Each structure stands twice: as structure tokens, then as C-alpha cells.
Image (tube, rainbow, N blue to C red; front, side, top):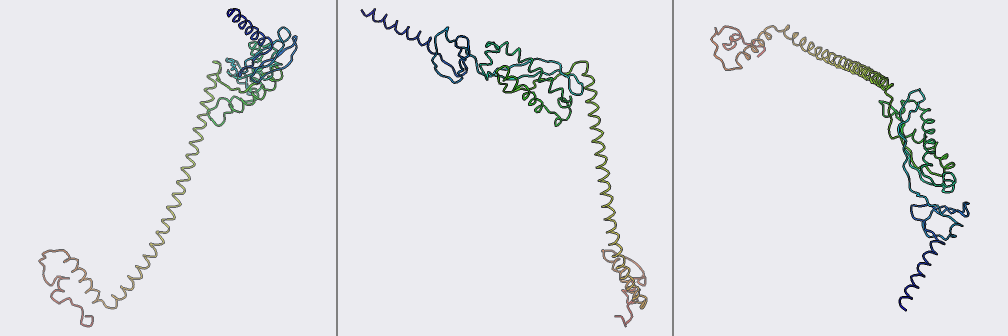
Amino acid sequence: MKRNRLTLITGIAVVVIFSMMLFFFQVRQTEVAVVTTLGSYSGSKSRPGLYARLPWPIQNIHRFDNRIRNFEKKYEQTTTRDGRILLVDVFLGWRIADPKVFLERFGGDVIACEQNLEGLMRDAKNGVLGQHPMADLISTDAKALKFDQIEQEMLTTIQPRAKANYGIEVDFLGIKQIGLPESITAKVFERMKAEREQLVKQFKGDGDAEAIRIRSDADRERERILAEAGAQATVIQGQADAEAAKTLKTFQQNPELAIFLLKLKALEEALKDRATVILDPRTPPFDLLRGEGQLPADHH
């Protein structure tokens, strides 16, 4: 009896599970599902959860991974606006945006989608780079590079076509590597060398001009200082000449006073240091010590 009851419960559980599998389906967080009824599109489910369905073969559920996929195409030759040939490696990230279009176009085949996406990416790359000179991608001046602008132009070109034709959204696109064919590598290096030499000449010219300016400023400053010093010296010289003329006039009026002062000055200079001098006491200016060279009485 107990065995029959257990068998019955197990049978009911199996029927319930089988029924749920026939009449319900689950969409996970990373999935998007397309429901077809008798082979025709019925709807899409992008939000995770449990949904009702009709049993197969009336309805069929197509599940696709909705996470971003990376796609990269290795080096391919591309010609720039100025006729330069470059090897450019481009990568992008895509995900399913319209599962109906994706199913109808590729039958859910990711490989087939990326094969078509490769041609779309090549057209966008060649079209955008064909509008830019090589200097926008390869230059000694980092400010002249336009990688961000070129990548954005490629992304803007490819996004609407990928969504409308393939049902996918291209979220990002970038240039991974740039190379040069061996045939033009030497020419590119020569051009880069010429650009560097031109920069050297420019810097040298700027340095020479700055040196000339500094020397000119220094010469003007020197002339100004010399002129000010000359003017000041002239004033001092004039004052000294006036004072000397005044003193000379006084000496001319009284020669004895002049002789006395000169002797006194000479005596002061001779005796300012400790020294022993043996001279005739009548030798000027030592004759002042004997009172012979004294100033006349009217000038005491």
C-alpha cells in the first residue's frame, strides 16, 4: 500500500514537471528569448522570469546570449586620404538588440553574424580612414593625433547599419594596433626624421631670437646705468670743482695760510704711525715743531 502511494506521488510529480516544461519556459538574466508560433515570430522576452507557452511543436523558444561579445579583425591594409597605406587592427563589442531581426537574418547563428559584421566593420574603417591623412594616426606631435575622433566616426558609421540590418547593437569600437608595410617604413622614418630636424631648426631659431632680445635688453640697461652714473659723476665733479675753486680762491688770497695747512697735513701723515725720524729740525714740515713755520699772528 505504501509502495503504491509513493509511486503515485512520484508519477504526479513527473507529470507536473513535464507539464511545466511543456507550458512554461524560463528566461535567465543573461538571455533574450524569441517565441515563434508555427514558425512565425510571436514575441521577444528580454526580462528574466518564468513565462507561459504553448507546447512544441506549436510554439518554439529560441534563446540567445545577450552579453557583450568581443570581435576583432586582424591587420588589413587601409589607404589614408593622402595615399598612405597602413595596417590597422580594429576591435568592437556587440550584443543582440533586436532578437527578431537577429533570428530572421542569421537563424541565431553567431558565427554567421560575425562574418557579416566583419564586412561592415571593414567598410566603416576604410571609409573613415580614407577621409583622414596619415598624420592623424602617426605623428611626432601627440596633440596632432585624432584617435578618439576617428574611432567615434567609425562607431557612428557602423551602429545604425548593424542595428537595422543585423539586429545587433555595437557598444564600443577602437583601434588596437597600427602597422606599416615594409615597403614604406623607411620612407615614413625619413619623413619623421625630417620633421624632427625641422623642429630642431625652429627651436634653434627661437633660441637665437631670444638670445638677441636678451642681449639687446642687457645693452639698453647697461647704457641706462652708464648714463645715470655719468650724470651723477658730472654732478659730483661739478660740486668738487666748485669746492676746490672756493678753497683755491682762499689760498690765493693768503698764501701763508696755504703753506701752513700743507705743512700741517704733511706732519699729520708722517706722525700718524709710531716711528722714529732723525731729521734736521728745520726740515719742513718739522720746522713747525720749533715754531718757525707758525701761522702769522693775524691767523692764529
